[in-house]
Image 1 (cartoon, rainbow, N blue to C red):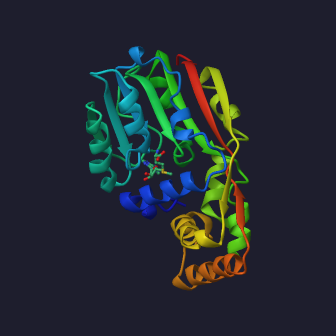
Image 2 (tube, rainbow, N blue to C red; image 1 turned 45 degrees about the horizontal axis):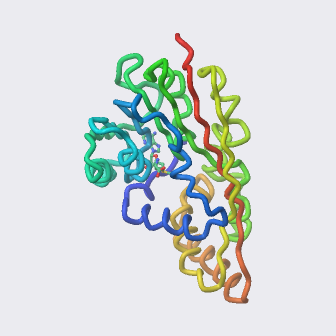
Image 3 (spheres, rainbow, N blue to C red; image 1 turned 120 degrees about the horizontal axis):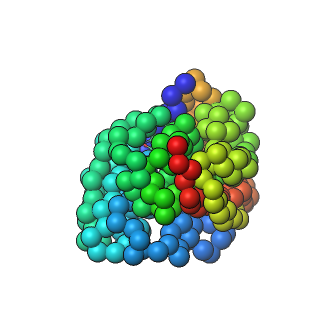
Length: 266
Ligand SMILES: C[S@@+](CC[C@H](N)C(=O)[O-])C[C@H]1O[C@@H](n2cnc3c(N)ncnc32)[C@H](O)[C@@H]1O
């Protein structure tokens, strides 16, 4: 079954959720900056951002990159094109956006890119790994970020959702912190793993943030058959009751960055 992407077709809403995650994170380091820390920017002329969203990683990498760098973003949601290009151009870099639903092929020649990025997106198109290795230059880097398989368990439990039948569980089984290195190993000789231990903590005064966060995630967390208004209302009620009673809601959000080098030649 095709995973639901509707939440990502609203770039402003997605950006607001990214801000909530940053504010409620216990880890003071910004994982978005860690993704690219220490890369040799002088060696990067062409970058490819797969599942680029509204341009959060691309904006950061554009600001770090050398003048003249070109950044190509790909996303299934056409609405992400304008904010992606704005983020790249605000940093004075060249941008291009392709609206594509990625699956098993990439429309670029071998060894075209010095940097390929797939932040919180590879689990949607993990069958693309051979192609990612193909379009990456021999001295290039593939950076990918994913969640732990257990990440959304606490939210599902608190919200009364059955995590075992959620689309997200199926996606994370395809590529997560626990199996990521094994998935990447057939395609790259050098795999670096960077841990990002983190907890999201919502106190009573953060109720509206928790409700927005849960609502945004709902299509991925609820059962495959979709989310009805009744399910949404039930989730809101449960989470509101939890925090209104003076409670605190905490969930693990232990993410991992993989940096892969030396793609295997085919
Ligand atoms: C969780 S968001 C991450 C966005 C961005 N990489 C970031 O780190 O902020 C996942 C993105 O992948 C895109 N996406 C999911 N499946 C896709 C597919 N098959 N082809 C292209 N884009 C896809 C979604 O539209 C969404 O923008």
